[in-house]
Length: 557
Ligand code: TXA
Ligand code: MG
Image 1 (cartoon, protein in one colour):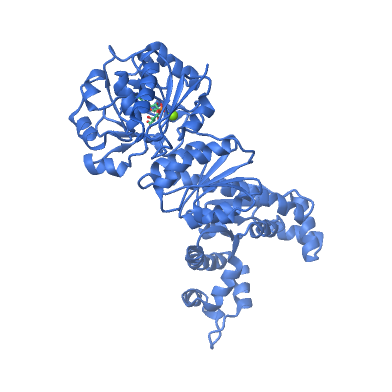
Image 2: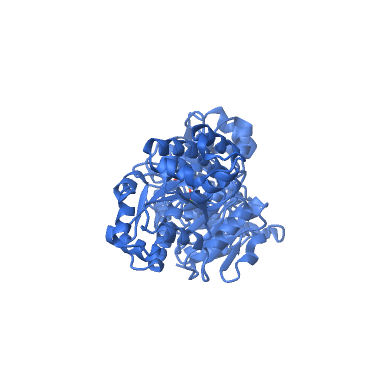
């Protein structure tokens, strides 16, 4: 089939030729054909909404799942009662203010008029009046409501130019009307008016704030901000599909623009793709970059987001990282499209502070594991060093020790460490008393260091991580364990001591089972060399950090 191209980008000139093209497109629709039409949001694929056969061809051309209902497009609110019933007054309030415009309303359907192919068998119907003079003229001329889903092949990013439509639909449909690039660039906002309060099913070209300013609180469907769990159903069936997805996996990085840019810098490899705000494009010289416009211009983001995703569809990049605007205004819709393209693989740069607590017995490999953290740019909080420093400088802790161990301070206030050591190592109760004091002061100190440290990766290194309560400051606690014989050999080599003494040292400590049982996860060191273990540990921590960040990002959504 040949797809006719109607150029209506300029509607000021020759009136006759414009009217001819509009009539030709309207005739195709009346005759049961398919036409790509411009709207202010994205291009639509239109057919006569009352003609079952024509509607069926839409599903075929798009490869659209049958259970995904279509929007019925009309030229104004006067047409609502023809296809809807029990229309609440609120619908007219909204239509008066926002139509024509990027708002789709879900209303009760007159199922005796509207074919089930449109509604996918639901008793509700989606109604929209787009703000584009050419399309309004075509529908008026045709005198029929048109079914018009977005004109893309199902699963691909929506089309924001007539060229995009031809890319997906050339040869499959009768015509494409070119009305220029779409002014908004993301699809309409879908609002369900069959429930109270009304419910946002899809964020879109009309910001949620604008709606709430007029009609008060609106519930937001969970499919808008997060991936659905198995068995969960979105109210808009289309929200369940992994839409807009380029071939390469996409990761969305949310957070303040400077931070999300830095987070992407940390992650990208040469040959990856990046979607970012204009200001940060220069950071990615070895990547394929598509910009969303200046970070403060959300209309630009919304106009460009699909183009960026679409272009990456035809490129050989390995992975794609995308900066994401915040959720205010059009940002909610842009973020939703990016996150859907990413299958909701989202990382929150602002909360990208990950604290791991490492513990385990001597010779297991804690030091190599900490080196691995440092090699990832992480900061190690050494609790043993901190303790010794606090013994010198923390007056409150020194006073508390003085009260319980009066003999260990000399007249001039100096602490006799050897004496303190002797006192506690000979008496378990005394050791517990000392530990109780140290833990009481250590934990707030570690907490303060973490708070002052800003974002990034941290590892708390503490043999008494669990006993001191410092584990509560961690996103994950990791037990570093190792087979006994390897530990013995490592300690002998490290400290130049006999086998017997090495075994004695190990048996004086808690066994691996203790750490294994109490920590969130375990890293077992069976490696022959410290270097090999450090490499293994690094891979382990990289995966762990990723998991924690994803959890945090979803927790915030
Ligand atoms: O901006 C837009 O709305 C564009 C332009 C072309 O008008 N159209 C568009 O249509 O985005 P489409 O088919 O790509 O998306 C329609 C969405 C789907 O997610 C569908 O599941 C939902 O609307 N929908 C349709 N009828 C519904 C109903 N009765 N109840 C709930 N959701 C419905
Ligand atoms: Mg669509």
